[in-house]
Image 1: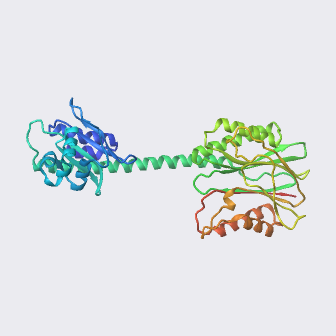
Image 2 (image 1 turned 30 degrees about the vertical axis):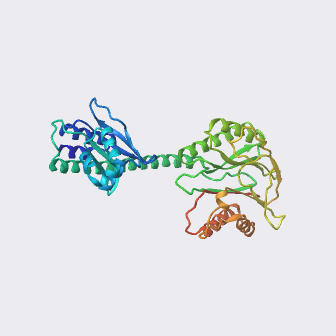
Length: 413
């Protein structure tokens, strides 16, 4: 009863192991004992806890094809040393079995199972009195070991719940951090109309966008537009997102050219973020007075322009290297100047838009995106933005999104 009460109150696997082996060895006055637990990654059973006094064991593990492990698995009950010595059914592997019992200084091997699944083996040595184990001893041992198996499963589930709670808390922190970095509302500048949103595929996405107002005179201002996709998710992705946003905001204060900002940001991210992470980002500066777009891209999707002067919208072709930021130290990022006209619309988007999957595993694609832009080109920026998102959502239907979707629309007035 004392052992049972102890098992119920324990949620640390190591303490359960020690309580099981220590209690049995001490209360039954045994020479030694140990618990071997399955190492799922390596397919072996290793000693996790032992009570063996000064008598060392010959080994500390059982391989998956070990005769002792196979015999215990087949019998599904206690396997005694004398059975290994006398049972005709074990004659073909008797020598290996006896060697195993000798190595572990064992008199019996008892399977530790949970719902018919072998989780471990309890090896117990002889009684110090030299007496044989009775049927009452075996009933007691089976009961204690079964309770231990349940306690270990409860501890595993408890740890899973704790880990789930920690992950949920981490996701909440990352989500709050990500949301805090997105603009609360589109900027209001003379000569420009803006609409933007980002929809996460999970609790925390990798997409983000930002706007930077670049003053160039008392009565005019340019708009810097950042659209990006960070490779990492959760807190790590949110922190890289924050770093990227801060770098561009700081560089914008120095009024550096677009291509220079891209090169500097790449060097800093390459130095600061861990290997394997990167940021696919495009940065463009829109001048509503001169009606121009100056843009450079590092692995981000190419923007689309719907112009009054053309019957079809077009993808902006860019010059220079296109490596995402943070991968290669030296990149030749260049800027491309695009002339705009009144009522022209610039559509920035991430790959989650064109790669959105429908019910038949078909991608949304560029053709559908270009078609909805052409149909809605004469609308306001918010109306075109909503039309694009609505068309994507209608295409995907009930299919759960596998990537974030970000759309930014800027209209020249």
